[in-house]
Image (cartoon, rainbow, N blue to C red; front, side):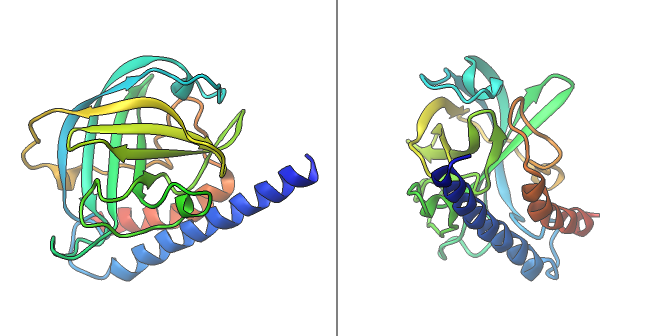
Length: 221
C-alpha cells in the first residue's frame, strides 16, 4: 500500500469510527425511555421493488455489480422519535432476500461530500437530506459506502463510492403506493448479522456497531 493509499485508508477509518461512536452514544442516551426500540421507535413499513442495474465500474461485490430485481421490505423512520415538527435524523432501511435468508441495509441522513458522507445530520423529511450507510463495507475494490437519495416520495436512487471517492449509481428503489398497517415494532433490521453478498463488515465496524445493536436488542426483549 502506497503512502497516499495508507493516508486515505487511515482518514476513512477515523471518519467512520467517529460516525460509529455517534451512533453508539445516541443509542445509549435514549435506551432509558419507555419504548420498544431505543432508536427509530416508530416508522412506516412498505413493500417495494429494488431494480439493480449495476454500474460501469466494478466493486467485486456481486450484489452491487450484477443486475437483478428484488422484492424488498422498506422502513422509513425518525431516529430519536421527536415530534414531526422538529428536525430529526431520518433513517431508511430495507430487507432484500438472499440465499438462505435475507440481508439488511440501513441508511441515515448525512451529506454526500468527502467528509459529510460520514457525518449524521438532521432533516425535516426523509427526502430533505441524502443518506448514507455512514460506515463502509469491505469489498475487493476497497472500503465501499452506499448512499440513498429520494428522487420523490416513492423512488430512491442508490449509489456506491469507494471511501471519499466519486458516487456510482447502481439501483433504484421503488416503494409501492400502499403502506403496511401495523407490525412495525416487530421488525428489526440488523446490518451486522444480515449482510448482502459481497458486502462484508470490517471487524472494527462490527466492534463499533455491535454495542448499539446489542443495547437495542436487550431493550426490545
